[in-house]
Image (cartoon, rainbow, N blue to C red; front, side, top):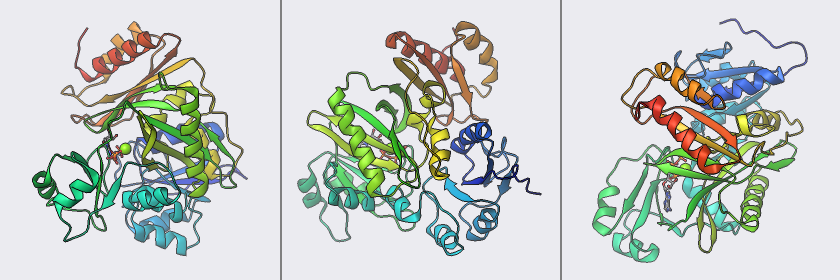
Length: 388
Ligand SMILES: Nc1ncnc2c1ncn2[C@@H]1O[C@H](COP(=O)(O)OP(=O)(O)OP(=O)(O)O)[C@@H](O)[C@H]1O
Ligand SMILES: [Mg+2]
């Protein structure tokens, strides 16, 4: 493919990975007028369908990543599971990786993340890294039953997360195959009142802004609903969560977007995990904030002044559209659009597979109950769960 450079003076941001996050970053790149290139595995990947400067190649292959990086001023990622050998090859070649590998390791490996956050005094669920030869009973006694078992690397959308109620279940879970370099992380099963996400954008030179803290709902491990701001969260707790996220972004030298997933408990917040990229919990910001997470991710990695994360209405609700039995989503457009002209529909150009994230809808306004009902109706109608 011939590479078409942006007009004189404009930089090229290259994103490794061709999923919906890259697709939505493209929308922000268009407005900024910069060059935006994507390294995608397949021609029909979500971003590869819409980004003309897509290079097809295996994002886990250092040779492909190196060839891709030659046209780019900055390299960033739409997922964290970038192969270490790719990061090393790019670093060696002098590519400008944002976030850098030193930060990214804490989003790639949940044990490294737990160690780092615990050492920094950031509240986390109690945890231990499973070692060969440990006793399942003793581990359970230390953490308390039931406990959560996770693969340290390679999990996403709840794949790689199990609940063990007793030693025999734990022993059984630990027989599952592990991804290369992964280990088992055991942690306290937190009795949370809600799950929160605190997102911050941070630029290469250290400017940072905090988005309003949102409430997320996970269904079968997949984020399905986001409400901004988190309903019922005290102003004090919201500031605590934002402070933690800003502190983590600074201490880990994160560049671009950081999402800190948290559990809200009776005793305060505990950090679940980190994502150093635009995140599902921030899709509301495309329609609901002055500067979206995609805009600020690009500004952060380009070291531009950041945009305002301020929301545009008292409430913003985002509901994910997951694949159902109905293969054709477009057929539902007439109904959902006629029913609700204020509904914002975002579909990712992905084939329907049951449970797969294929789009989202957003509504904003003053009446939270009404917004929740409208967003869920639209998502359910698109999916085919309801037909009226
Ligand atoms: N320690 C815990 N206590 C209670 N629930 C938990 C715990 N850890 C994870 N969960 C539940 O499982 C979900 C997925 O866990 P986690 O975020 O660690 O996995 P993931 O697969 O990496 O997720 P993602 O889709 O965000 O990449 C959480 O959102 C939460 O609902
Ligand atoms: Mg998660």
